[in-house]
Amino acid sequence: MPLYLRRRADHYPDDHAAHLFTGDRYVVLCANLVAGNIEPIDSGPSAGVWTWGTTLGGGLTTGGRADSLELGRRKLAEAFRALIARADLAERPDAKAGEPVRDPPSVDEPASWKPVPHDPWWDRDHPVVIHQPKRVVVHSGELLIGVLDEIARAPNAGQWTWALSGTRPNPPGFVWRGQERTLDEARAAHTACWTEWLAWAGLEQKQPTRWRSA
Image 1 (spheres, one colour):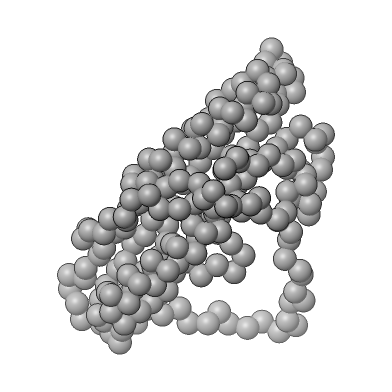
Image 2 (cartoon, rainbow, N blue to C red):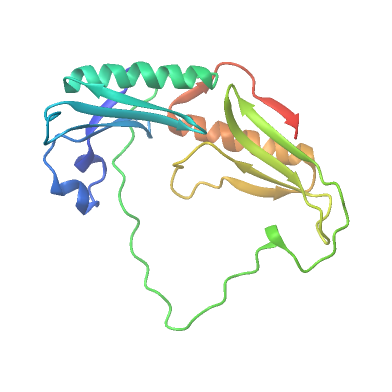
């Protein structure tokens, strides 16, 4: 499946900064995921040379220069495929280029101030019940994709929080963390979340993920 090249101003139509430049700045898409960027050097001794960069997160990042847009595109594609191979992932053959990214509609702010809802994730007002809480980390190849933590404090001691990592950006409204009653439920929730993100990014798993105690 080819990666898709799109003008940055077309991919971010609401980003005014993207429209200050000419059409020579591009994003490279793997489905909805921005796999990288390509842009020219406009001035100085390297004017006319193109710079490119690609990343999958979690330290899996690389970039370079090329003498033309087409050469930069090929180098970026090769580098991105090398990165996802290190994460035991591959492109989905049926993936299509994602839609342009629009800013969410504005929401009128309420006239009066409202307190932020209580966050049960970091409840420091309750005693520690479990003094050696467990932690589980999840890897896909070299990429850390999740952390699951046992809650140590009452009243939710023994329950588990989970969070997806190494996956920025995420789809709009994407729920990338949560809390479950048991480790098995937290693992299932994380797996479902990871599967949803892979579909959005146009990627598929080539080797099973690895779970281990940390």
